[in-house]
Length: 456
Image 1 (cartoon, rainbow, N blue to C red):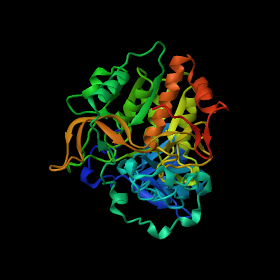
Image 2 (image 1 turned 135 degrees about the vertical axis):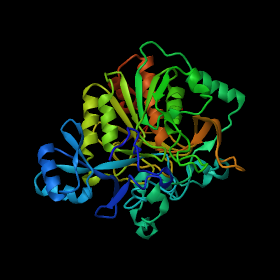
Image 3 (image 1 turned 60 degrees about the vertical axis):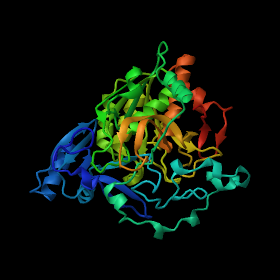
Image 4 (image 1 turned 30 degrees about the vertical axis):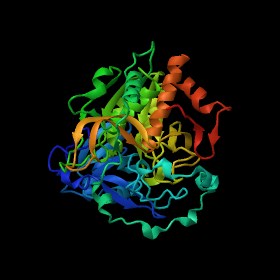
């Protein structure tokens, strides 16, 4: 089975079935699920692992499809989970090629978990933050205890509400939670000037692994923003159903957020995720290792999820390699309203970022001691597709270059921008910026959400 580097198979896959052909789910003890590629196994000791695989499946034609450091990817495996068991019995380290998801799909929560084993914050379950009307909320009626992640009652979770047969989980086909935005002329001009500002001397470089950049003509503000680059182009409607795909435009939106906070910062967007929002561990790791990295480099990752055995070994190895070369990694914490670790945000040294709303933690944000920072993540305004008008007779998919969007996907880039801005202003390297923006003892912190970074 051959795959392109953006996650789509070169042949044999019908985009109208979403990720059904390339994503499988497995349950772990306690009800939590993880997602994986259906024909891949990540392992060490490639020759021995391949010998075991060929003994278990002599007719399958299993081969080594890629090597990253000590890890090898076995491809064309009929049943990855069974092979992993056989490899472990042989004393060989083995894991699935985990599938992780963009943190912009807020309703329902993370497709691999459906909130299984997680905890709700306040009344956030089933709420699409992009559709919340702040005018309908009376601040006087808000009980701070209901939005304090430290005081959540896990007994409120009802496992019976989780439906693993939900077609949105099986296929990934769902409406995007992005909403068209029509900023005022003054607001658009202000945002445009900030995004397109000339780079400051010694500007840091930010790499975004995501969906690529918007590929609709005309190219909108991106043509005037030389600091934002990326390839290949992101497509808005791969399945051809006249609706914006749920992950489409994600990388463009993130690049705009970063440059709003740190005008002129160099942002390079690589396409590793599909327009449905799925990216696999091996593909992400491969890109991370290919990035030119020094102590003025930041990596922005707005995807994640649960993994087998809570380690994501190949991705952890690639991120550690990036960190050892001087780079800083920022990853969104996830939108499951859960304290259970999400990877890569929970990996050592990674700055996991939760989301804030107007009056405190966003109802969908993940939280816990592994979350080091939080930033605005509800109703952010940024760059998007221009000239895409989806379903006739509705304005829900009529985008003219701007969008409102919510999720920890976008809180993470706010922190990335804050670090880059500090690096340009001080000046300092990425690690020093983390000390000043995230770790300084005098900064405001929220229990289980980390340092508040409110600069958007």
